[in-house]
Each structure stands twice: as structure tokens, then as C-alpha cells.
Length: 178
Length: 294
Image (cartoon, rainbow over all chains, first blue to last red; front, side, top):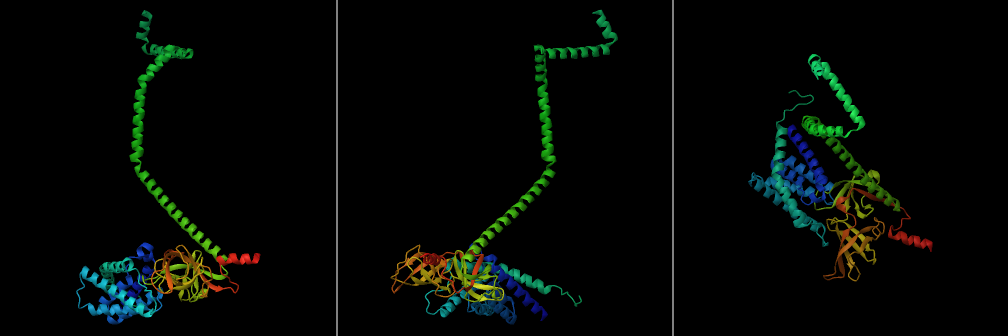
């Protein structure tokens, strides 16, 4: 139980770190168009390697944090991220996701799916308006989905290694004997 | 001759010394008299000896060069490293100074602009940007504690930036005018045609609900109308770069480039309160002065 709480807290801290990176260093004009969605990667990682309860909660929290710092007043991410998490959980045992290409394709499709979901929702909320809040499709959106997909294997490897190390670490601390 | 021979045989060394001394005295005497013969002799000896001297000097210099160039290389390397470090430190210092100078210049312009505004403004620093590419917003380091409220206008000396979208006690999110959800009431400065400016992503906006009968051309400046309440009248929004009169209906549309590069924002001003006497700024100020003069 304690281990799972620790794991959740660590993953939340990683999420906050990723959010900070995504809103600061990865926003330089030239990087911005191809910046990977680190929080999406973390959500998918949670979907693949986390429990339904704590992972779902974390996915919601990460989506909520994204909503907080973005100019989106509705709360799209708090909805889309748990959906992505459960979608991943649903498919993880049905699809082969061990190879680089299959994993990248999986992430790419989910990122694309989230985009389409966004478009549908925004059209719903902007009924009557002719404009669509879609970033230039081939210039921004597809490159971002691609960069996110290509980085997925590397990030999953790093996160998995970090989490495994954390769980195998001997527990020491105040009031606890070795 | 016999005497000399005798003296040489019996007193060889003293005789030699005396002869040498005599020769020296003779040479001195000859030099004193500046005789030609001696200069020739001197020149001859010099010509014979100088090449050796030259060779020796060159050898000495080479040895000295090797010594200084190679054997002292350790010290040289150290000195080189220390100088490189010093250069790097100075470069860093220089960069910091330049950055400070630029920041000072920006803040000075911001302050000058602040003084020209008839409203109360709060300056804030941009600390983050939107985590997604779907929306265009920035996070600033001022919030409710500084009097920031939702809907307040955010500007810079170059023009309109956007409006406050969300607030927290110490931070706030600014919805940029380039966001698809942002709409600002505007007028075309030259023709006074009314329209709504809507965001279109990267430094681009669209002028909507602009009557087809209105005369609008590329290069026209678009400013705030002051009707929405948040923005004072006359603040620069952008410049029209494309007019679209095709299609049906009573409206035409135009695309405009924002006067502020919202991708490079660092400091912003938030209009927290408009003074009751607040009048349209920039373009309206001139009119006011004229009226007073009349």
C-alpha cells in the first residue's frame, strides 16, 4: 500500500516536472511546432504500467493541471486524459506494444485521436461560430503527434527504469529499522 | 738582432707580454689617429668573426625558443587555460550585462508607456506558456493579490496582448488575442469601420463582421474601439495584411498580423482600473489637445 502511494506521488511529481518543461523550455518559437506532449506520454505510460485506480486519478490530475495552465476554459484535458488512460488500459493486453514501431504507432494514433476528439468537442462548444481552434494541421499538429510518438519508447524506457529502481530501493528513514 | 734573439730565448714570457702591450699601445695610437690601415684591419677581423657570432646568436635564440616554446609549454598551457577561463568569465559577464541592458531598455519603455496611460496598470512577467498547441495563453506572475481579475486587459507598449482568463492568488493566465476563443471589439483606424478581431493562431487574427461596403485595404491599422469596456480606445491591435471580399453575405473578412509578437512576450501590463477621466489613448490624445487649444 505504502509503495503504491509512493509511486503515485513520484509519478505526480514527474507530471509536474513535465508540465513545467512543456510550458517553459519547450515553448521556444522553433521548438514549439514540434514539441512532444510529455504529459500525454506520461498518461499513456500510466495506462500501460499503472493500476486502474491510482493511474486513472493521476491521469485526471495531469489533465486538470494542463487545463489550469492553458487557455482552455472548458476543461478538455481533464476529460480527454482519463479517457486516453482507460483506452490504453483497454488495448494494452490486446495489442503488441513491445516493439519501437508498434508502440510509436499506438502513441501516434492516440495523439491523433485526442486531436480529433478535441475538434469535435470544440465544435460542439462553439456552435454557430465558423472558426475552428485547430492548429495548422500539417505544420503543427502532425509534427507534434509524430515527435510524441517517436519519443515514446525512450520515455517509457526511462520512466519504467526509474519506477523499477524506486520500487526495489531499500527503505530507510526515520523511525524505520533496516 | 742578436740581442732580441737572446732576450727571447732567456726572457720569453716577459718579452712576449711586453710586445703584446706595445702592440696594444700602437693600436690605440693608430686608432686615435684614425689611420686607414686600422679600419681595414678592423673590418677584416669583423668579417671573419661576425659569421661565427651570427651563428652563435642564432643557435642561442633557437635554444631559447625551444626552451620557451616547448619546455615552458606546461606553464604556457596553464596560462592559456587561465586566460581562456578569464575570457569565458568576461564573456559571461558581458552577456549578463547585455541581457540586463536589454531588460532595462524594455522596462524603461514599459514604464514610459505606463506613464502615458490614463488607467492604473500593473506590470507582470511572463513565466510560462500554454502546455498545448490548441490554445494560446501565457501564465504571468501577478494574481488576485495584486488586484488582477478575470477579463482585465493585458497590453504592452506595442499594443494589445490579450485578456486575463484565469486567476490565482499569485498567478494568472492570459488568453492571448491570437487564441481562437479570444474576441476584441475593434475599429479600422483610417476608415473607423467597426469589426471584431478573433484569434487565428501564430501572430495572426481575423477581422470579422466587417461590412462589405467598408473601405478596407492592406496595411490599414486596426485599433481597439473602447466599446467592450476592458480595453481603452485606440490601442494598436495589428495591421491588415489580406482582405477577402469573395463569397456572399453582407460581411467581408480580413486577416491581420498582430502588432505584438506574442511568441516572444516577456513583460506585460495589466489594466486594473480605468480612471473616470480616462480617455482614449494615443490617437485620441491629439484630438483632446487640439480641442483644448481651440
